[in-house]
Length: 324
Image (cartoon, rainbow, N blue to C red; front, top):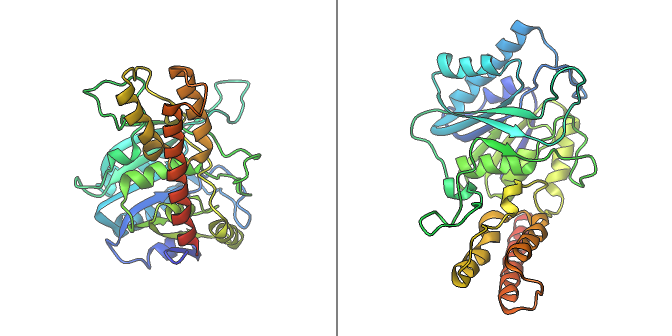
C-alpha cells in the first residue's frame, strides 16, 4: 500500500496542494447533484453553485495533469453537457470520447424509459497522450488471419454489470463503480508506476485497481468512514476484479485450424482474463461449445488448462509479494 495514498479532505482544497503537471491520469466520479446521501454530506446544491463547484475542481484537474495526461469524468445527464462545455471551451482540453457505460439493471420507471447507462467524458490535455490499445482490446467474434489476433478496439459503449449487493466485494457506498470499468481506463491511459488521482475516491475502487495494476495513486475523500472502508479494502486479499466485459469470455467462432486455435487459446487468459479468474469457467464453456472439447484430459484441452494454471500461479506469487 506504500504507493497508494488516501487523503481525508475536500477535493478542491487537496487538489490545490498537488504539484502542477505531475499527474498522469485523473479518474473522477463526482457527486451528480441528485440528492444522494454520502454519510456526512448530501449531494444537493443549487444549479449555479454546482456548476461553479464543477468548474473549480475541473480547473484543478487540468492544472495537475501532465501534457500527456488524460481525464475521465463520470456524470449524469443533467450536467454532462455543461461539463463538456467547461472542458472544451473554457479549459481548451482535447475531446477524445463520450463513453456510454451500459448496465443491465437500474432504476425502474412506469412513465418513460428506465435509465440503463451512465456517461463518461474522456478528455486529454494535449494531442500527444498515452493510449495503450493492446492492453484493452476485446476478443473478436470472428478470427481472420489479416485481423489482429490480439483482439479489437472495445469501442465507446462499455457493458459492465453493477456491483450487486450479493457480490462479496460490495461496499456500503451508494455509487460504487465496477472494478473492470476502472481497469479499462487505467490500462488504456497509464503505464506501470504512473501516478493516478481520484478526487472523489468514495469506496476506493480506483485505488484498489491501481494497487493491482502497479500504479501509484492518490485518492481524496471527504467522508472519513469511506476512507476507513478503502483502507480495509486495500488490505484485503485480492481474489480477482469484481466485474468483466462479457466479450472477454467469448472465443472467435472460426478458429478451424488446430495450430492457430491452440496458439490463440493459450494466449486468451493472459490477454483478456488476467485479474478475472471468475470469468475463466465461462470461457472454458465457450471453448467446449464451439470446438467440442468434452474432456479436460484431452491433449489440446490439457495443454490449455495447464497454461491457465501456470499463469494463475505466477500471478498469485506476484500479488503476495506486493501485499507483503
